[in-house]
Length: 450
Image (cartoon, rainbow, N blue to C red; front, side, top):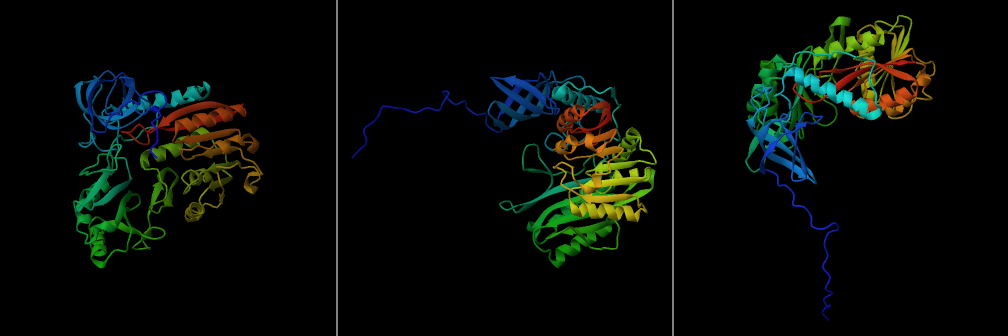
């Protein structure tokens, strides 16, 4: 029996659904201001547009990258009325590559943007203002990046191997002949890499390539299936011609073709060399890293008879320089493999007053055997998630001074509120320009017990 019509017609709650802005659509906009991540902000027909490559006051043509709800993300395609501070981008592919988003800003304006981002996060979290703003810690604005991951993808339909960097807001790969932010020793390798990989008989097995410049040059190739003899020989010859070590990463950990060749990076002011393996975390900007370690030690002011705690210690980037100046360093990291490598770095540098431990640093430190004795000072360098559980128990460690190195101003600000609740005051703060030409902000803060 046929159902009787009910006469009811159903509509989505709230009335008619707004038509979404299609990807690829072109639009002309007037930019009103900059967002915290350096993108231009415009408003049109009830939507907020975030535009990469635009500056406040500019009249621009944009292309939509994606849209969701009332937010549209787009990139600048043409500037009709430019802001006077706009400069030509150092990179010819700046309009499409997703790596460096604020090249059109002069470097001093990039620093000012990052300073505002840090200040706004502290203010928003708890009306926090440091007693003193430190000058930005800077290095070269180009030619600074000692590590880079190169994207590789086999296009099945086109039977083509794409090699380069990811495009803005896309999984597309942008071919890069010359990357201005790479250190000079890696430039010839970067330029020769596409031709090399296209000589492979089975390019489909390539996952990605990582480049590193430290005490030696290194090329790591991630592969999803074993390399045949032809492809391996082509790769070996390329690395030999460029004076680079070859590392392969299939199943398991990355492995060097020649285990007898050392690889690492130097911390020259302290006459230290830290062993490094591709895949380990390392700061990509060697000059700013060295300056950052020096500033952290200066702010922390460690004394020869003190016991100091280093949290999120990694390979020992801060712990080993600290160990040259104090009685004892306790260094803690979440990954056991990193703990082992850091301990080995201490031994190879003839430092025997630093002890390394593994611990889950997303949990409180209370009850850890190494924490019972307490510390005079603490240094921590957490990931983007910050260190909320760690700082919640900071006062119990007895530390009078704390240096917090952050790669995320939002979590630094959140953790600063907690430290202030425990009786610390924010004595000093400033930005670290670890990634010039990007809006990424690293910062350092000094807290002292009241």
